[in-house]
Image 1 (cartoon, rainbow, N blue to C red):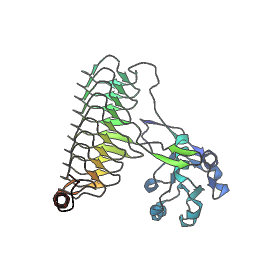
Image 2 (cartoon, one colour):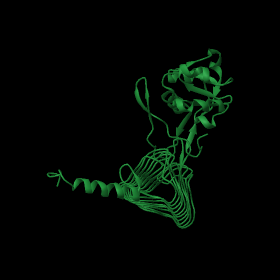
Image 3 (cartoon, rainbow, N blue to C red):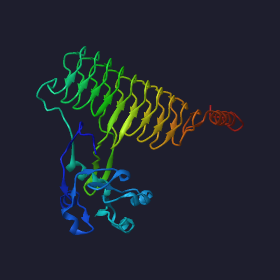
Image 4 (tube, rainbow, N blue to C red):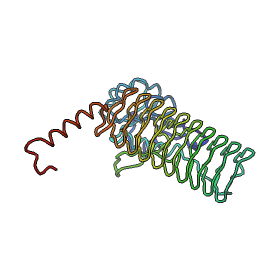
Length: 340
């Protein structure tokens, strides 16, 4: 279930209603009165949940569904396990998005006061002019909120934190001694989209951000909330200005990321990893503990622990140096006039 501190529960809804909203067709019309209370990812869906399957590579995962409801393509219906209720559609992910919007809604500041009376501020919190704090938010002792900071409903900020001017924090749990510099955005929706009958639709982002103790987030950097689970940044990790951490990323402890680094969704980064400026990492990869990624490197494969990679596409440093030296020799050899 999405965290109720950040998402309002709008359910339940009947399968007949969800089918109508999404344009899907019930495999068995007799299931139309079945009630659905929440959406879930495929790996954790159970009774009362609706999920989807869009990637044919995950067909084997259908076997884990027990009493759940699933949007999937008609040609895949025969592979669903007994007891799984099916909603058939050519656009499973977009259909699931329609169901998610019916069942869950992000909590928004109700606009009653700049600092909501339901928020809790411990002693010693500094609230500068123009700060907005939503209902249910909690701010720890000794934390400084600079002018123009926005703290969303349900957000928890620990003790002795420093939140810079015009920073925006939502859907997040933040530890102690965290520094978030001016203009940073924590917890906005990650990039999720799917094709539907009427064109591309946004996928609801129903997860959170967790920043552990001692984390630093640089000015104008963005840390997206999870698509369903959490985006997590480990203790004492330091992120420079203008860095993007996408949804569902798990970044370890004591990592550093220089300016313009981009880490794509669902990537797992071990402890003590360093990213040079403008480094980029593709989605669903693993970067092992202690690895170093050179400036402007573009990582498209898993990086083993302790290795240094650089280049485009990124590869081990020694290999990149040999290839660069070979290319330099070839470019400087015979028949290369005009290449200078």
